[in-house]
Image (cartoon, rainbow, N blue to C red; front, side):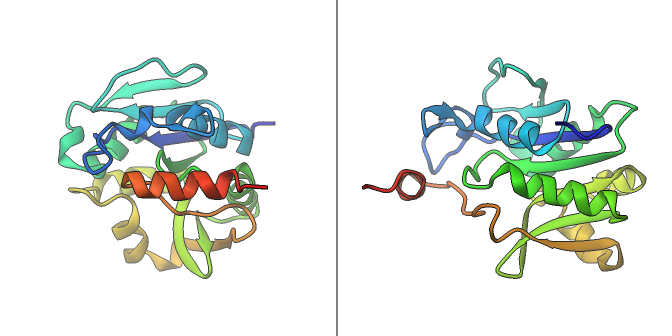
Length: 196
C-alpha cells in the first residue's frame, strides 16, 4: 500500500560504460533493472514512481518517465530532472539507484516510517554506513536541488546538513551492493539465486 504524498525517483540514466550496456536494460533475476527498481519503490510505498532515463529511452510500465538530456554530465543532472518532475502533491521523495538490485522494499518502508515519525531526511544505512535509498521531505527538496553538481547525488547536501539526517538501519532489508561491471552482475545474481 502506498503512502500518500511519497513519490519515488529512480535514477536510471547512465550508459553503463564499464558494463557495456545501459544499466536500465540489464536483466537481473528475469527482469530489467529498471523494472526491478520501480517495483522496489512501489512495493515500498511510493506512488507514483518517476524514472529518469538518459542513455536510452524505453517504455517503463507503471512509471512516469523523464528524459535527462544532460545525463552525460553525471548523476546530479538526473536527480535534478527527477526532482523537477515531482507533482505538487509530493510530501516527500524516496531516491533510489537502478544498479542496486538486492535492496528490498522493506528498506523503503523503513524510511517512510521514519519520515512519518518526524525525520526530515532519512538515509538507509548498512553496517552503519549511509547508502541508498534516501528520503527527503518536501521542505528540503528545493535546497537539495540547488546544491546538485557533477556526478554527485544528494551526498554533499546530506554531509552539509547532518542535523537534518536520520540514519535508518536497513541491514535486514537488503544489500546495497551495486553493479558496475559484468563481474558484479554475475556475483549479485549468484547471491540472489544461490545454488541448492
